[in-house]
Image 1 (cartoon, rainbow, N blue to C red):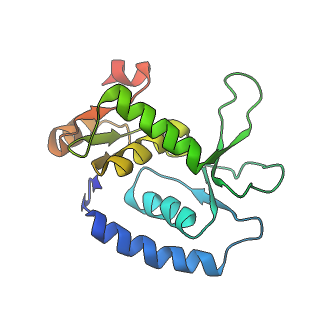
Image 2 (cartoon, one colour):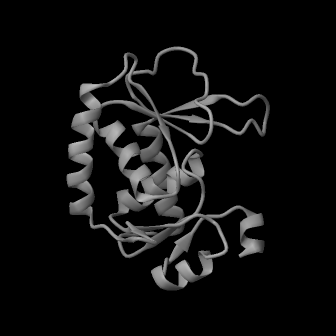
Length: 174
């Protein structure tokens, strides 16, 4: 993981996640649903992955914890609020099988591998941002994390990502 504050290896990340997931597992709420307030930083990545490693269902949010109906299913690992662009906003449950299928489809379509460094500037409370983490980690590549702000061009120049996912407005602004 490359960020504006430095670089963290998979080994270093794994050690932090292992410690954090043990702490989370001790205090896991009933139903396994664990709200995670997100930012575009390494600490959020650690928290999201640690919740899943502890056997929980990570529910990323920005400002308010969304309402979720029912208890997460056995295979659920994420509960992601939608924007409601095609109707009322809701929480979508995502399983490990969903993630595996999405990652394999993406890798097959884009041809990405462990040599790639994804630019992560999409919010981590949406599937688009989370997908970048999944794709990068599954391939064994790296991810460069920074918010979409006035300093992003400098960060891109310094971190040298090889691939990015953005909405059209972001591309125009960039």
